[in-house]
Amino acid sequence: RKEVEQDPGPFNVPEGATVAFNCTYSNSASQSFFWYRQDCRKEPKLLMSVYSSGNEDGRFTAQLNRASQYISLLIRDSKLSDSATYLCVVNAIRSGYALNFGKGTSLLVTP
Amino acid sequence: DAGVTQSPTHLIKTRGQQVTLRCSPKSGHDTVSWYQQALGQGPQFIFQYYEEEERQRGNFPDRFSGHQFPNYSSELNVNALLLGDSALYLCASSAGTEGAGTEAFFGQGTRLTVV
Image 1 (cartoon, each protein chain N blue to C red):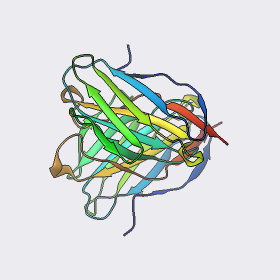
Image 2: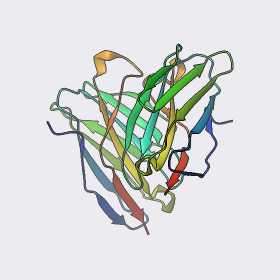
Image 3: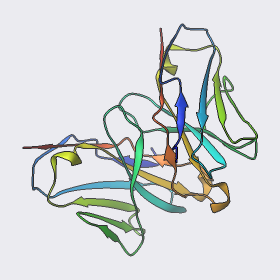
């Protein structure tokens, strides 16, 4: 079983839609959680860190459920520029300094 | 302020050859990690260098080796290339003293094709 699992999609949504991505992780000792965004053939970039209390950054909301070992990302009012792959990333004590990436969820926002 | 820079951007090698990829970290960062990203997959951790030493290693064979220089730049070497080594190789830099799980800044990557 992979340490971080995501629905690969693709998710095709119209502009203005709300879309949610889910991610599960297997290591209960995981400490740090992130969502990274990766545009086609580009490097991953940090979208937001995920905190236990949940956090919001503009149209983006991230939630963490430690009991269920589940992370989510909600994008409201989707823009064409949101089209990208969204990577769920977890750091666990056992992993030391390594970041464990999910496979990524592909989002395509259409006009 | 230059971000993470990697060279070359693209590379084509033949099976059995050796390759060296280079990375300069973001200014102020002293830790460099290398990741391999195969097509359609998330990045996989290869190893991390801090204070010129390999601090942690992922599940990659000994054909993958690295080095960190006093100026914090780093090299990734891959010997005896296999077709399966074809991937995007990403370098990420961070500040080592901030501990695990801090934000990593990625370079644009080196796309290696083995033929």
